[in-house]
Image 1 (cartoon, each protein chain N blue to C red):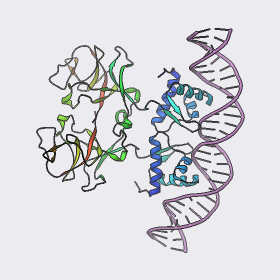
Image 2: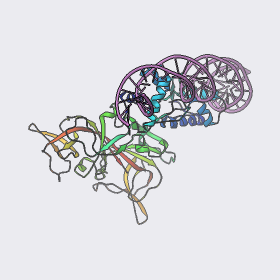
Image 3: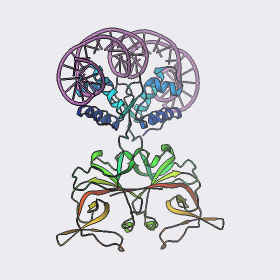
Image 4: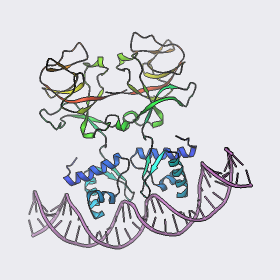
Length: 196
Length: 196
DNA sequence: CTTTATACCACACATTTGTGTGGATGTCAA
DNA sequence: TTGACATCCACACAAATGTGTGGTATAAAG
């Protein structure tokens, strides 16, 4: 990605902040914010930013400014240049984007979350209080961690296993017993989130 | 929140999906999508949705539709009405919003991510391959899990401990030795994310 | 029967908005 | 000096856009 001038960065920052608030700016809103009296000036900036690869525009559509870099992408790093207080990243392994973190290509309606209760899955690194993002689906494969509905309407997170044509729920913690009783799979674990 | 009719929900869903793509629709775009031939029809729907508390509008501003409920909030559930294939949620404990999941009120520049390597923190439920969201800060309290920079520029995740005025890094896995050698804290763990 | 809410339509009108045209100034490298 | 680029301006114009006015029809509630 080409470097930006200070002013170009200011324009980009403004656009970024507005997009983060779910309403990209119009050309005249940018002009007002940056103190330009002409719309032509803004067009020049947008052209420059587009040419340098920072944004895309759908022409003749109001507010249709799309950022190329994910506005909320967070870099995943492995190594950091030593002695650098600014944390300039040495090795960036990739980026994570909050937006498609759980969803991937799923619709919001296909996903829900469960707060983990208890320690029956600690051996799988799933702790009490973790948030489990579940993709709704009535079936799962052997070994998948699933959200299952028990007789008392409680939702529980366990590993689904098949043995001799019988499905059962296996806790990762050996101190707990597998569940053979009536249960139904309601979804499959796709993400675990833990806040500190 | 008041209930919506089927058509009202369709309108809301369309708006929601467009906002998720960072460009709220215009009145005429809604009309086109839903098959209305009059802008007045859309205005009636927006009025209804606004009155029922699902959205807010800034008048005379193009595309200025703001959803009241987080557009990407995912419900956290504990119990589910039995025998309900639609998964109508019985108990909703809250919502998680991807946007402020790691950030909270932090700026994007204050945060980065590290991919966890190895099993030195398994006892803390942090597995190999997990993504750790780190808030940049040079200090942390006793017992905090921190990202630390080692001599070889490697970033590692350990628990920070103080003992007799000496700081050291303690793995959660007793098979590993604490680190007393030169290290510097670069940030504090705020979120763990694991994708399946 | 009247009222209220829902669910549409047509059309006009003032603003908002993107775009186009035509400049001007300064810097920096070739 | 020439050219590319960045940084601004004024102004015009067509298209997009939100809003207003005034309808029709149906169903449920009082």
